[in-house]
Image (tube, rainbow, N blue to C red; front, top):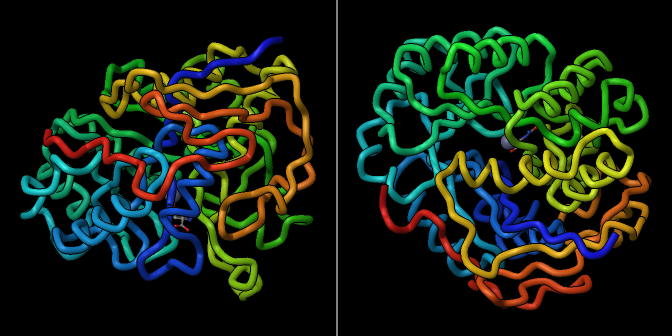
Length: 358
Ligand code: NCD
Ligand code: ZN
């Protein structure tokens, strides 16, 4: 096959770190990882300290990203247990959406009770996405709010067969929902934790082979809209703690893993492109800028190795796996941003995709 061209791939779920967690990664290092992974743009989650839950923290993050990013970007605002809904009208136009953490994970953001979740659902302006971390029974709890408020809700990193069944039914009912799954839940199971140890620990945790099979079925039938990396770097030293922090990097391995599945006949090329580019752009209301695309050589294979990674954490749960599909070049707005293993643009090249208001 000749060169594969993918228009403007977007990863809508990354934790770029920086700020108080710059030792795990910086806006410059992790957006370089995004380019190396073939992405035009990324959407950054609000749980890194200081959490993006008030206008001052948002300004701090926007300024630092504006200075440091080498790919295009957007940021989520975070729903806080201490009611921060009063600032929603003021901030919504400058962010890609609201993130609600409804089950425990890294950081301090957790909405544990249904009345608090409902207050955030009610307050968030309808023009921007609500992205939710919801596992197990919490998926049903959130669907009850979607049914009441009819606001577009993206279910992040869905990992279980039962959750897929609930969301397939929600789509059949006509609810405004979209579904993301991660490459680690697609390509790893709980059995891999035996060998990976802490490097196989993330939220949601790796699941059974039956859950994994349900995710692949849902990829094929369109229940799943997006493959999102949930790129969440932690240092190797931190991963040696007991318990280790949850999260794994993924920006540089998602596209090659999916193209490997295409090569093995597990997924069509059309679906793969929809999952990493067309669908995430549609869900977040983004147009691909002119002359923005990624060139991939689908016939080059290589073994994932930590030495080759741009992410500052310097490891991958997929190390040692052979993948097909080498990212050759990322062109952003007519400019070569990445080519043959090198970032070709300076920090600050990346633009905020949500700077213009709702
Ligand atoms: C994420 C992190 O480390 O920020 N961790 C994870 O295990 N996925 C937080 C999250 O997305 O839940
Ligand atoms: Zn996440």
